[in-house]
Image (cartoon, rainbow, N blue to C red; front, side, top):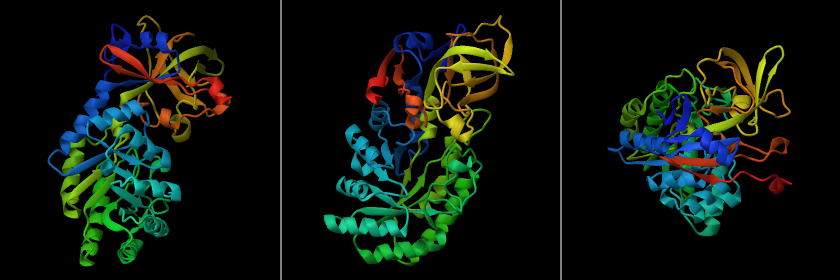
Length: 408
């Protein structure tokens, strides 16, 4: 559920008209609903309330400091994948014992910062990376806690670009080599083996892949126990899907019900790394119609493009697109909604049946809170949009629109 609703044929976010926001902050514009975000946070916390669980929000999905502050105030930690994200988590004030560090290509600078910050866990992606972490830990005189990211080789029904647990994935250590990695870490004595980690992909709407992966991880954890390697944490990653179109994602209640029995058998504490499931439907991208072009098909050309929202071009991702004002008397037509970028792939939506649209009107692109602004760019030398947070009847800018002078 989100708080983007029509009132008398006009689209509102909570108690504010999108038209009113556009008048003040122009377009293209990312708009977030605080009530939606808080609702999602409370929902995931409630299903794990009777377990020892640390929820680390995936900073890669949305890195706006104001939104991250809300997440921190609600008790969530940070799943970071870069130097910048580690620094941002520190700036937001996240407790280092609620920060985990991921990635398959961590630099020495990043590893040093993670160790100095005394974060909860470094998820080591390979045996080669273990040696780097060990070398740096020794030079700093520290003894960081680590987990190994394992690849359970699970097929998932999602876009290939976001399936991260396949056999040929660049992420993680194959299970057949995992015991060697743990035994080597045990011998090094420069790191503390504390956990086990896996992340099988993103936008997963079924429960079965998670259960299948957990069964494999549970069997492996028993091998570790025989080697007298005891785990404090099991990090199940993220990956829970949301509804963009006609998907019927597994509910948080069902996800918890099916995973908790396995998690408890693997380690006493669970770490989650949700991103999309918390933030995707919290935000929209608001765009203004530049013109309607009628050739072999009908094109609505808007002022937001693949530079603002890359997912449709990169993943062929579907985002629901709604007119901000509904005119019941207008006829409905099929349109392709495209941006102004000089690329044929700059298509936000194809064959959408909408009311007849005119220049100057507004369209709301839903489900844009995750991997929207975070993946935006200055392609074609276009400034990044502003971001606005709505809180009941109030709304305010949480990131200013980038000025062309900054880019030049």
